[in-house]
Image (tube, rainbow, N blue to C red):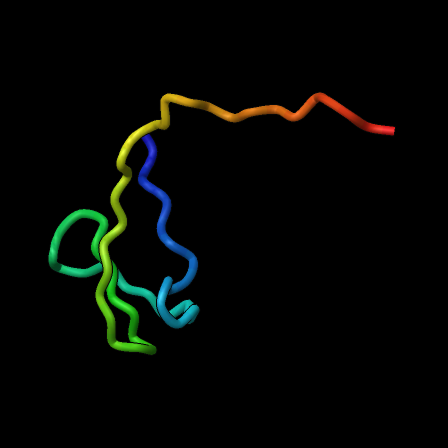
Length: 57
């Protein structure tokens, strides 16, 4: 099994200076704006993607 993907930028300020936090799995700290945040996978949606096949010139 491979490692989980890391975020590329802070969702608050957009900076890329992120470090894993000691708060637990999925927690990150941004050195630029001094914020901590956590990423969490909630699950899959039951409805899936809807295709728009109608119309077109």
